[in-house]
Image 1: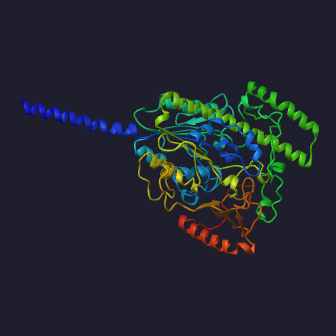
Image 2: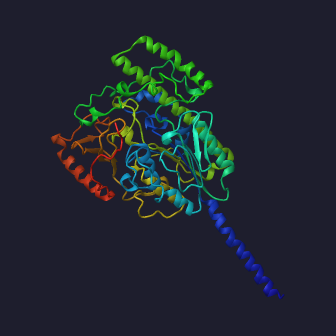
Image 3: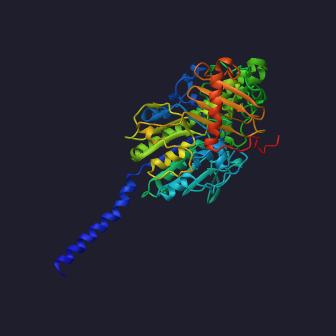
Length: 517
């Protein structure tokens, strides 16, 4: 064989080697994405978000050192809002990048249509390995995931201890605290179950702090001999606002049950766990029974029990999140893994005297969002853009370098994370809650929130509310009929109707729940 031919073969072989290596190098440079997701986590139960105006002293008792660490290393978003403050619909919105009226999941009685386009399917098609481990709560098997393990007790709510885990292989019951079990499974997948030749997307999804707020055994005695401060509007009488507020069934004083208040132990505890539970709650329950409290004293005892358990549960989860963050660092994954923390919606911690979510008021409308993206996002940064959960799908795809389909309603926040100049970002968040009659009896309503104002329409009773969030951040004074705000009402009403058309929310305005009271 002559030298020219040998040289040609050598050049061809080298070129082929370059071509075959190029995609692998490109894959290696694509970031991994870890989406840490919780259920019903209020921003005022995260230390990094700082004190809340109606209960600033409560901040001193919030213990979330690992989420606070994440915020110090990345960007914290102050104005993130859900489009429908209830578990299943918010999750469906995150998966699809579409509001409830387009993804079909209006309430928690709906089975999510898993055949539709979701960001995990698009990530898979784009070369990512995808996994969901933890709470799912969409009533259909996850699709678009190479691996999944979900809480599979009736209703897919899961339990705080000894959960049933469902997967393509079937069900298994695991002994232990659920937050720890979910973390164990997520770390195990990262260590040994994934395809290490691909970038990954992992949703590491906690049940905590969903109702009924059972902490890990090491947190049972947090705040034991402390009285937590009350919100200034704990005794809200709902005057000036819609009649819907007087129909609701979510008052701490009147609507919590014995399981919520730990007056009876959870039925899923084993003998050892029950002994530990009773060691902490038993003496306090005996003292409560003997005291025979009534009126405000009874309401405030319930508040103390509830908020302590809520914050204890959050601390239990935060400890597990810390374990995950430590694993990323120790394994060398931290440098090329984007870490996102969020929750499906906020929650009331005695604000307006309530627990739960559903309303368009700030505490349940607002979602936490913290993003750490090494070398892309500045440390200890904060952002005030109006973000919605429709934006998550577009953001995940953009992080992966993939095209965002035109039918996704949200926008990528990647330019915000990189602190690039932003033009034409949204100036209002759109909201629509549908489920009525349903748990907690919250009337259907829709509305918009701008930087300063919020307009809400309770359409089954045709009542309106306008709030000036600058002068009234607790939303205590409905200004809809105030003559001084006539021009604001007109402008916000016109903008609301424009936004309804823009997002395609032209469904008939009727209640949609199948709930049978």
